[in-house]
Figure (cartoon, rainbow, N blue to C red):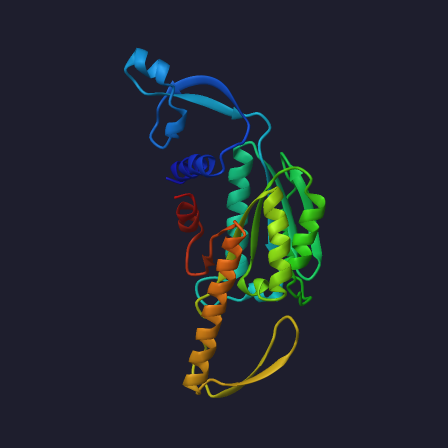
Length: 273
């Protein structure tokens, strides 16, 4: 079952991230899940059986994962935290990338570039480096602008960039972020996975509480019993989030929100659908 799932995901990945440069090899019989665009109609007509062209990437794609490792992405109130799900998705996609002959690289960032692994055919074990950064006692703040400027500077070859960040990373310096995203999109294929938790702006009614911003250390006092105020905060946040997502899509970037309630496999099948 696990092997079948991996094979199906690999085929779906190949359809979704279709290589720009291909070399036709030989032909083989059609198997359920194969890309219909690869059907060899000449052989099919002669044999009365479906045949598809085998292809191999002549050079493969460069896949760059940019992962937010700040304090805000460590939040999670359901089955898992945002960062644990983000790392699972990154590991799964990187394995699929390697299997499909792509070169894989990774950038981890907070308010600075934490670590950068250039694209390699057999990349270094960056998931282990990410684990060390995530479990560091240092409180890391978010600055998506730093990551975007870095990518626009170091990526000289057209690549596929996958940004995995907390939703809040898009709220600070929105105009500057959109400008950098526009530059990045003009040079590369870009997707964004904002991490979402249903309780980002919801709290239990426990009276007046004092909370601390995990990144800035700023102290706030909130009356959670004030239903009207809490509902207003949640509504404003939802509206602002929708506005941000719309702005990113207007730049031409595909945006795929990732919810902590979902499983990694379920999200991958949904992504490749």
